[in-house]
Amino acid sequence: MNPIITAFASSPDRGQGLARDMRVRWALEEVGQPYDVRLVSFTEMKQPAHLALHPFGQIPTYEEDGLALFETGAIILHIAEHHAGLLPGDANARARAVTWMFAALNTVEPPIVERETASYMERSEAWHEHRLPMMEERIRTRLGQLSAWLGGADWLDGVFSAGDLMMASVLLRLKASSDMLEEYPNLSAYVARGEARPAYRRAFAAQLEVFNASSPG
Ligand SMILES: N[C@@H](CCC(=O)N[C@@H](CS)C(=O)NCC(=O)O)C(=O)O
Image 1 (cartoon, rainbow, N blue to C red):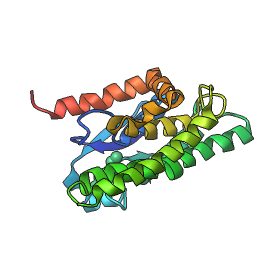
Image 2: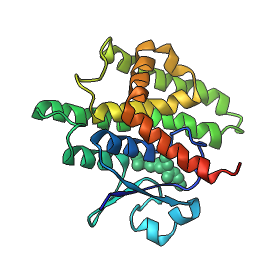
Image 3: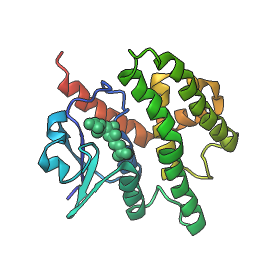
């Protein structure tokens, strides 16, 4: 049986591929594992059946042979550990790829999401415009450091890995809501390399199809 993931029945990003099911779809496409999708509404996500899978009432979740997972980091690590293609064979290189997954989620994503959340939760507050430059500075610090690490390389540590999949996914969120990424041409090119991968394109098309089917006309 195929694994089943959950995704928004109606994604607030309007099919831009920013919802986090996209990274799981991408990982499954990279390893060639077919999957099924169960669409959930915002209301359903907060009800007991979904909360039994995801304690925080969010998407995505991942179900496979009696195993239920939440958190994209855990889901993608699981996929990468059970299929070839997302983690190198060498033990040290593998550990470094996992390190990049954590770096994406724990060090780079938080300031990006903070700015994004503030832009819709705090926009009308008088202090928002004073806080914005500070939030953007924190993002630039991380982008500058990441850019310096990447240099002229294609990927963060040799061959493409789950670490790159996660980092590119995180940077794509920023690209959708600001021009900041363009200040770092090697990071823009890095993200474009991710987007050009056939597996990414298949995942993007699949989530867009859900959005198109849910929007009238
Ligand atoms: N840390 C979680 C974040 C999950 C998350 O924020 N999901 C969003 C969609 S991208 C969500 O379900 N938002 C709706 C909500 O929180 O009510 C992960 O990486 O899986």
